[in-house]
Length: 455
Image (cartoon, rainbow, N blue to C red; front, side):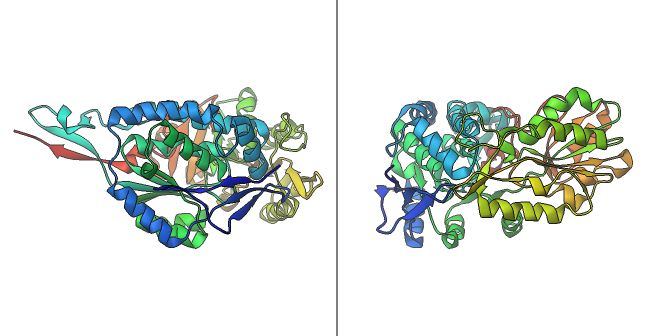
């Protein structure tokens, strides 16, 4: 198969560098050539974007809807949707069905972009000052003109979020992951074919050293990464950081975990166990051992397959990386009981890559430093928990599903500033709809209210 050419997408169209970077799949086989742009090209491109005017609101809405269709049906970079999904599967290690679902998430998000924005708009605010009556009121206005997105490479579905900025009139520049640049490239082309001008949305692969320059050049930025990224940008109000999820489930004694086992297992292993919304720890009021063994029994039936197999449910990665990950798990799991331990995680599939079997570790008491260890495959820490432990073990979580009839616990979780989302009941932690914010509504970060009156 010929290498796919992924040109940078600048304000004047496609830009191909003389020495492109190779993109390889999890076996180390090159699949694409990626044009990586220099620092000066980035800063000049953002300056061009800032001078551009957004499309009128109605045109933005129709263009986003059309982009959904283009994303699903067009040949882009020589790839139809199925071929794009196959390459995404190969480079990320996602199971094929998960990669396909992620691509569909992007298309669905484009079609429902304004459905996600409207719940975030304050009831008394207007997007257009002309709609404010003679008594005066509030205009919902942008905090800037250009949004930079430093995208991750673990799953395509994350690209369903930033088009909301286009809907609100921002110009957007995306730095795709050099691990998985296909989604950002395909989405940018789809948006341009649907009616956005080249300068409205850019896809600029860069070296890591240039990424911070992109953040500085834009008005606002959305970045993804681990604790190092979170720490670097934590005090910058112009940067929205999407860090580790450390998602959890807590089950109180008034609820029988057996009635919720399907949801617990799906929360751990759905999406290949690779997403920030997958459950990292399950805390149980009472004896956690029967729950841990029941989870392990369910997870152990997963068959290690090539992730390109339509029946695959487990992720893959290069063999050396998989072994290093298992070694890390073994170190972090010291002092816990390995129900499904690090020694059985790595399954050599040949050709230099491996599948990752699920891991389950049992703890009698919650150790915050351990239960917050998040790894990119189905890996869960199951621990005892009591009301005396309080919220401490549940803090710093993207999602907490509280399986409980204790309304006071739900009140406390919602009041805790380190818990981003609270679910309760038979709902997997990766559940999402346009009306439910992921890490707040993106518009909370992008927009502000301005008082307005015209007499």
